[in-house]
Image (cartoon, rainbow, N blue to C red):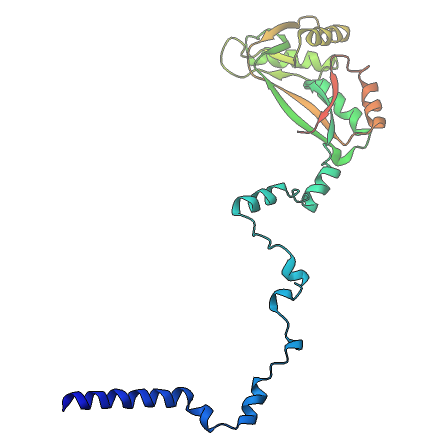
Length: 248
């Protein structure tokens, strides 16, 4: 009994499969099936015969590797200088030039100042102080007391010598009368010679081993005309020096 049932189920499955596979053809319209079967072979184009387009025929471009991209970046020209830097290179700052005339002290300083005032330099004329550890001075020997100092000063004034200084510090030079200090021995000797002409007989020249201060005149933005005028004054101040240099 079981064998007959198994064969019956197998036959039923075969019939069901056949109906699902070919059953539609049994019920369909034969003319419709014929219309679907017509393929129009003259209009069929094989895909392999379609000509490729330019975009399809062009070879693919590979993206540059990171190393290649870096090389391209290095090969690019450097950027142009900033506009401000270009302006500085085209118009460099001008270095101010000053005229230096010195060094003076005592009556020579007063005389030189008077001569420069006649040039009407205004704010362009300035002075600077220069210190030297040693120098030379024209002096009179220390006197015994203050009364002797006053008598000597009266004699100097009578001779027209008004530039002097009495040393007050205690020591070997106390109550000596300084008539002027100078940077060089030649300048001191020249001044002593001028004092001799005025009648001063006891003055001497000696090296002064102490800090001495001198004055230098500084003329800013001096043009050639001013330089020529100051240079002409060197005839009256032969021991002075004149030079043009960068302003400090």
